[in-house]
Length: 392
Ligand code: GLU
Image 1: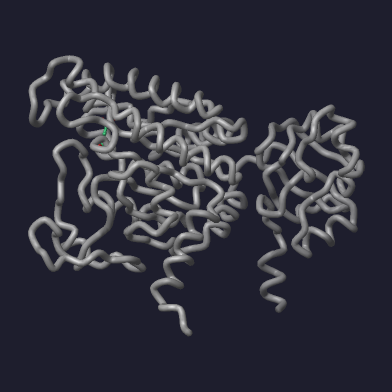
Image 2: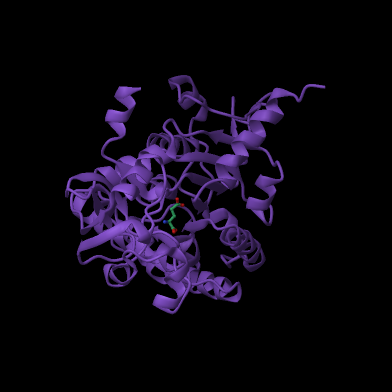
């Protein structure tokens, strides 16, 4: 019997989530904040954190982009219902953000996880210098196993200089973190071919491979009372994410354990990435402007790297420079020619002690069980890639 094709594609799409190294989860205000009393929905958040913990256990790195600061703060300050003036939302965010982060930190701590608050302004992703700075901080936090809890810095964001919606912010964060999957959780469970509130015949779209003008038209603007983003900002987010090699999925956050529900086959809309995440990540590694150091390797290791292997301590002859774990470094052959670039799994101080040593000795040398490699092959780009491809 043949498996129906939509089942095949459904499981292939799920692999975009389960196989992702880094997953950005965007949480809309409506999910987190009770519309009646402005309270945080603690049970729902606890269930989301269960899902986050499951990702961590599977070896994945979750990042959360969360809305809710303004929705919480406006109640605390007794601001009127309806649309707020910019300075009112700025004030509301100042109050609400404290509670928002505190609750995340508490619930994550109960799951044994460390929350890290990051408040971004538009400039942090649009200006190259600040983009790199923000990226370094993110990399450091992720390397240390913290779970970033990210929102726009609404208190200082002005009308002209703000994302304004967390859908696009989340897509920029996915790009910043070289994430492979972005999950948009909100009160809508999918993209429909017509407005489901107006048309009974509206059907959900399972997979979008190209965002056409027609689709954008259908998306219209389905604003909910709390959130800022409608389908238009979700499509804009999909454009940003997929172009950066990150697949995106729109799924319902109205259920508890929303990620588990998604994995169990809940309705959703997938936007598979246009380029492979690895290649985009490798492009990013290759396009590093500043290398922090270099490993010089022996001839055997150089051959192994070309054959697609990771760089082991045993094959490294010497290192140059002073770098931290995760920094980009050059890989030099015995003649000192650059044969590739990669992200070092060790800081230079530790790596220096491992040069030429066998992987089985790492624990005895460092006093803890570190990584088995100096540079993992997923974090390595060979300068000869292009030549090799041309030869074949
Ligand atoms: N950053 C806003 C907040 O935390 C929400 C923006 C959005 O709803 O997309 O309140």
